[in-house]
Length: 271
Image 1: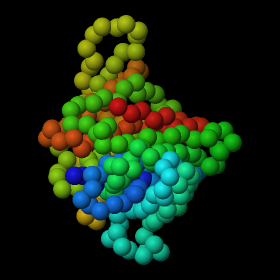
Image 2: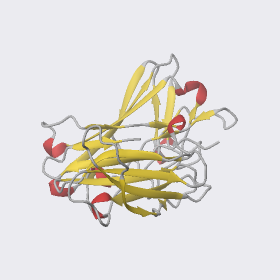
Image 3: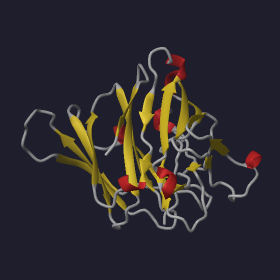
Image 4: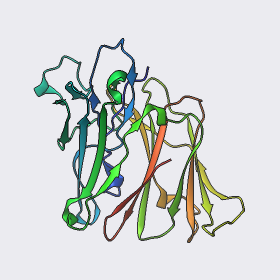
């Protein structure tokens, strides 16, 4: 059983905003390994990350426990019995919400964790990130917390992506199984946004993405691609990105973050 993955961001080397957060784990209600587990993915990290144009990105995770018993939230960076002061760990009281802003880093790739399946329906998780230098202009954007039923083993698309110099877009693809090598093909298509148009999309470019993984054994793999650097892009229109798993394993997910260069407002595109 794949343990739960909760990735919190990626520190990218070029464009810095939601397009460059760092990765880390959170797990809810850790139980004995023999119990059935539900896998989760948090695609960006909590904490603060500097960005382009003097932006400062703050990401927080809110965890709601809707059950009548407390739920433990912690990472897998240490053994389960590690002291609380040596690792990330919180207890969410019954019928309450805990907001986590402290950054938890996980060297490059996503981290793994899990939630006891019997508790999964009682736990709600929401990520929200915003540029605090412009906090009066926006409450930020929510980034989905992905459950294992939403992972892909067949091709999926990320659509209606702009071709426009005022936006910068980053594609992230995740492989949540640390025991296997990612096998993925990405195709970028130009699409015509004309309503009711009936014609095939135009293949612009295809590539095999390079994944990085943290050094720890619990780290998942992530690939980042700056779409404005894709060769042969059209000057107008829209793009569609198709992510094609090649190994038939249900362990992939991805999203595109689109950031306005002036306002730093972010749009999230999911499958």
